[in-house]
Image (cartoon, rainbow, N blue to C red; front, side):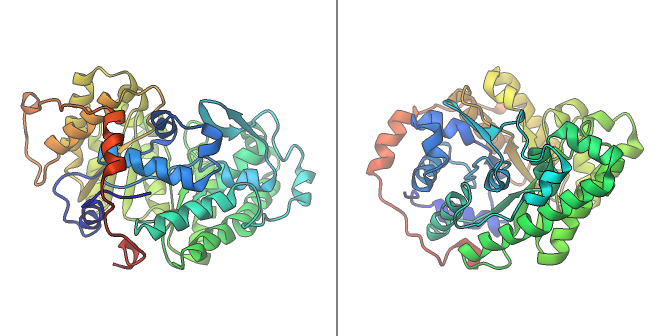
Length: 397
C-alpha cells in the first residue's frame, strides 16, 4: 500500500480550504474491484486487499479524497445475523427475501454484536486502522437507524409497523440506535484513537417516495438526533427523492430543512434528483443557510455517456453550485461497466470549469484529456516511490 508523492499534501490543502479546483469525490465500490481484476468476496473480506486496490484506483483517477467505500448498509445488519447475498461481480447485499426480524417477537432474541468478532465488523476496523496508518482522513461510517431497521425488518414490514404498531417500530429503532449503532460508532473511533472524529451515517431508505415527510419527522430524523445527543459529531446523508416533492414547494423545502437538521453545515443532493430539478434550488438553499454543497453526478450518465453530455452536466453543476459557500462534486456510484475514459473526462471537466475562482468558461473551451490505461498506470505505480506518511497526518492537523 502506498501513496504517490504529493498526494497527502494535496489532501491537506483541501482540508485547509486551499484547493485550486472544486474537490471531487467518488463512490467507486465495485468499479475498483473490476478494474483491479480482483475477487469481489475477497475484496470485501480482506482489509489489506481492499485498501490496496482502492488506493491504486484513487491514484489512477487522481481523485481528491480516497473513499474506501465498502458495503456500508450491510455491516451492522450482517453482524446481527441478517443473511446477505453474494454475487461474483457485485458487492454483497441484504437477502431481502429473508429478513432477520420476521415477527415482532424476533426482536427480543437479538443481542448487540461483538465488534471484534461479529460479521465483517473486524474487516471495517482493520480498513480504518490501515487508512489511519497511512495518514489519510478516516471516516467513521454507519448505516443510519431507519435504513438499518429496513434491512433487518424489510421495508414493507417496517412501513406496516409504522402504520399499525408504531410502539414496536419505535422499540426497534431505539434498540438499533442505542444497543448497536452508538457503541459501533464509538468502537470505530476507539480503533484509531480519535474519540471525536465525525461519524457519517447512510440513510437512503429514509427518502421519498419510500417515506412521507411525516414519517421522516417521527421515525427517521429523531434517531439520528438521538445519536448526536449521546455521542456527538454524528451526521446522516444519502437521502434522495427531492424531485418527488419539487412540485410542492412547502414539502420540498421542509425536506431540505430536515436533511440539514441531521447534517448541519453540509447539504448533499444527488442525481437523478438534481438532473430533474436542476442544481439551482439546492445551491440557493445552501448559500442562504451558509452550508457547503455536494452535488452528485448520475451513475448511468457516467456509465453510458455520451462524453459531451457528461462534460455539459459537469459544467452546469459547477456553475450553479458555485453559488454555495463551498462546492464538492461527487460521483454517485461508479459501476463496473463504466469506461475509465468517462471518469477521466468527468474529472477533467470539473477541474477545467471548477478552477477557482470559478469563471464562466464556455463549453467549447474544454479539451478532452488523453487517457492512460489502468494497466499502463499500474506498471508505473508499482515502480514508483512511496510518499512519506504516518499517524501525524490529516486528522491531527
